[in-house]
Length: 459
Image 1: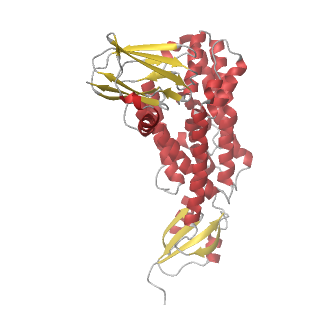
Image 2: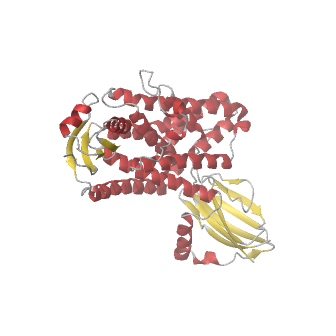
Image 3: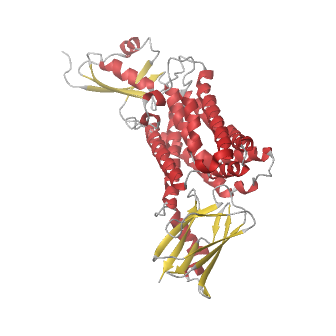
């Protein structure tokens, strides 16, 4: 007599190497009369089936999916005893990657690649290489990892050679280099009309960070949450399957769109292209800069492709990549909170550093005549000191000594204290005069929000 109680079984499945496999397996199982529901996960390599009565045997399941090449290996208990071990391993690897990135950021290597209109063309290549290992990696690198997952979904290992998995990456970077070169030529001719404000850049960062955050959650196993590309129309998000090379068009346009992703190094290159007043020079500056970012960013993409397609490593790689993407999304969100003058995690490091190293910063700035003068040094590492105390309704003279700023730290903004930005030049002292109009703690930051400080206005 058949069992009338639903039976829930968990299976380990081989050959399920891409997220598109999940939907195919679920739909085919649900078409079976004995199956009540089914859920597959490419991340865990498991399929959970709830039967109405008598369960299918492993042989019957394998016969059902013989054409697709999926193999049901064995039944598993519902609880996964290795889950904690997998969590610790993926968390450890992701934490190591994050620590290495933050350490690299703190080294401030951007100061060693100073470029201007008299620099050689090789200098712009080097400038691009450093950008690829710094803030460009945080934004563009995260985007590449998120897109790689989607490209892998549209290009199953069983149907295409490994070269077809690489094609979207080369198309992506081809579009990226072309768009940067064209923008450089435009900036060299009518650049003033194409200059984007920090507000525009901030909205772009927040939009992309939100998409990257969703992709990170998706990779961690929350499959019902859409990834970055699912937020766009299908014809743009998913490579066309009618072409011999998956993603023959869409990866190219994704690469072109990265010209709007802000990065301190990118804006420095854009400023020089603008100052060149020549479409030829402007195009070369931006083209060589984007070419310099190619080695690191391409390595990120190709490494992701290899790991996502490896049956043994794909599950671990997806979890590590998901955790890293979430970190980069929050990292960029925190930076934009600084740009807009809101409280952020950066405030804790500022106040703790002041209490530990510079308690004198809590005292009011002495008056020199009728002006309060504050002096600060700016470098690729940050601002020192980064906490000041001034009186309200009293003129402030802010002297900023450039000790070797990088692409991000070479301009300072503080929307609540003054309009515009303070541009810095190596070896020179920039001066900004303003009158604080209200009491409170106001944040100043580099225009990308990566480095910040506080000016406290009192009565």
